[in-house]
Length: 92
Image 1 (cartoon, rainbow, N blue to C red):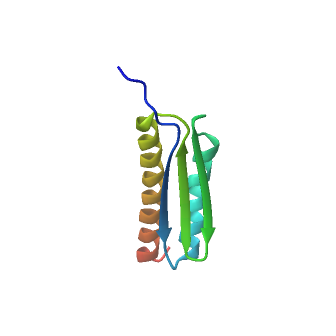
Image 2: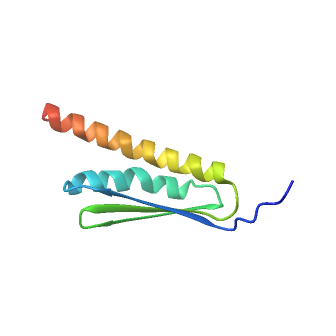
Image 3: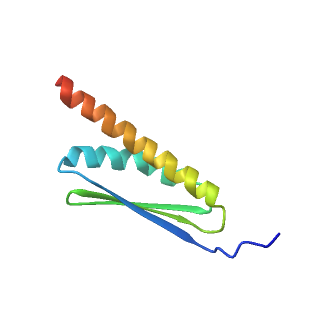
């Protein structure tokens, strides 16, 4: 079996919204993942105007770990959007 030659992989994604409270809630939900991330994963987040940006870097070759980390982040973002969207519809 040939050893992997990957040294670093970076995935960038953005969430755009005019709802600044939504973007702030997403940031708060995602930041703990950076603290608890595996040692070979780096997560950087920033909010600028109407955009929340996430950079996920894998330092190594474990693409499955990278995919699982991104999946977790997207799930958290989805939950925040769903909960805040439901509260706006019900007037909470």
